[in-house]
Amino acid sequence: MIYLDAAATTAVRREVLEAMWPHLTGEFGNPSSHHEVGERSARALADARASIADAFGVRSSEVVFTSGGTEADNLAILGITLASARGRHVVTSAVEHPAVLEAVDALVRLHGADSTIVGVDADGLVDPGEVAAAVRADTALVSIMAANNEVGTIQPVPAIAAALAGTGVPVHCDAVQAAGWLPIRLDELGADAVSISGHKLGAPKGIGALIVRGRVPLEPVIHGGGQERGRRSGTENVAGAVGLAVALRLAVEAGREHGARLAAARESFIAEVLATVPDAVLTGPREARLPGHASFLFPGTSGESVLLGLEARGIVCSSGSACAAGSDEPSDVLLAMGIAPEVAQTAVRFTFGSEVTADDLGRTAAELRDAVAAV
Ligand code: PLP
Image: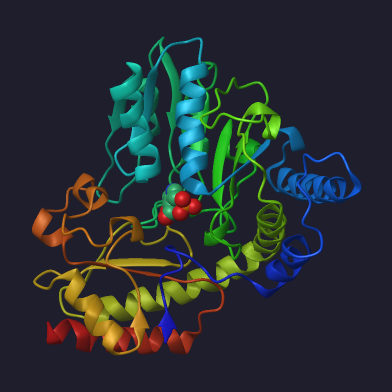
């Protein structure tokens, strides 16, 4: 099987599992316990936190472990807005993940908040000027993703942060797809809060983090025993945190070199598909996209049928985001980019990490031509 759905999830890396193993077996203590067994777990958690803080250029106290990207996004959106002294207006974009857009919707429905959803251009790009123009005296938060999961578009987050400089409005950035490939340090992004998720990086499902500047007030979303400095209660997933730290370190170390190689492989794949599959259209920009991300429209087909055809040929990919899988609705991201609903339904997404080979991508392009012709 050729697995080209890395944006949905990745396998746990061997080094990650090996680092986690002791904390799933002998070192099983609760990090809040005041005995030797608990204290060893607390030290492992502190080491993982320090390593993640280092990757983001922040203090350890600015790392909040969560159950994944969705929870990190919810904590940022709800937590920062509800704690804001400015008001309850949120600015975000039409191409955000549902973890952001649904959290904003919950704020509006349940907490009397107001939102401005800025649009995107045909490449899925947000305009920094439009974001800045949407900010008001009562704006509590601006949330713009680092890179899009469906079309791979890299958003100009540093330019957006620069456009907001001096306004005092915190910027949250969903870097779930970007971590390991793009700069994620808070000072490079210009962000005050960043979400990441372990299972997109070679760590397991069920661990993530919100990196949030200590100066940004944060209301907890999950209440309880006061773990994570009161910002996220619940006994910490120590093994998951250890795994996330290792996965992030490996991804950041390898990211630049692998990213360049992957972007070259992606470019050959895109060129091959556009040259050989009649009427194929690339979605998102040709260059300002994630290195391991190629997404297309095949007008006149159905994305689901192409997907099934590829699967029958041993290639696994996706028709859009895994979160929207099973829904017949055209993708909101593609609609926001101005693509007609019947064309949006022909979308197919190929996403891959550094383990992909040129042979895998070459074979996929050839099989894709046959799968599209057979629909
Ligand atoms: N944000 C983005 C951009 C994503 O792609 C995803 C998952 O696909 C999430 C958030 C949610 O992350 P998780 O699956 O860890 O809840």
